[in-house]
Amino acid sequence: MKTLALITAAGRGRRMGGPRPKQFLALAGRPILAHTVEVFERCRAVDGVFIIVPPEEMDPVQREIVEAYGFQKVFKVVRGGRIRQQSVWNGLKAVTSDCDIVVVHDGVRPLIDPKLIEAGIAEARKTGAAIVAVPARDTIKRRGPGARLETLPREEIWLAQTPQIFQFPLLFQAHEKASRDRFQGTDDACLVERLGREVALVQGDYYNLKITTPEDLPLAELWLSRRKSSA
Image 1 (spheres, rainbow, N blue to C red):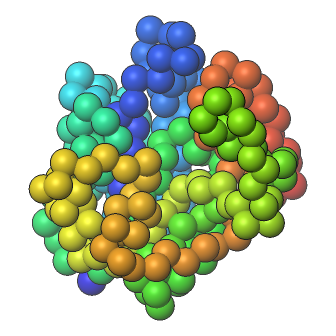
Image 2 (image 1 turned 180 degrees about the vertical axis):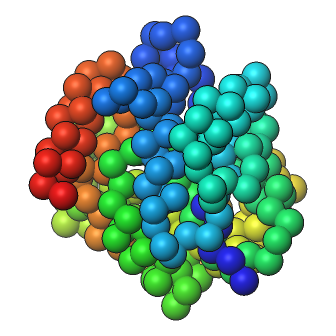
């Protein structure tokens, strides 16, 4: 039984404003996606990787990332869907080998610490489902009808990141039900929650940045260089 990672990189990244999706932009001389895959390549707890990308990027990713950087754990480059949920579902259906744990991670979170991946896997083995998340630092407001503001208890608010880790049959069942019900969630954990299952929290890392806008790139460059200099 294997632990497999689904790296989702099928987004169009329109907020970055470039000709190619953001996951292919250069970070410290390499595509962002290559940095992300490299973390899973080095993580001993992960046996194999599926990279999910837009249909037109499947061949370039195979050549320019998998082959160019010699990644040995990449089992397959998978065709992405119109939305992220469809992409993960495509990835789950592409798994043909025995798999007991599946790790879902954003392709544009290249600074994830392998120790966090391992901690999430260990938790999911015990509980069935676990997500990496960080406590909210700011006061959280909810805007209701008539622009009325409500202050939420900050100590109860956690900001979900990836990886999100699940026992494979559980996540497959959750996505299968969501597809059947035509339900669209905001992350994989909420699909599992719809089954009545609890999802465990693993304390995350504020450095686990999701590169979304142009301003995120220099920050990621800085954090990446600091990590390498302290290694």
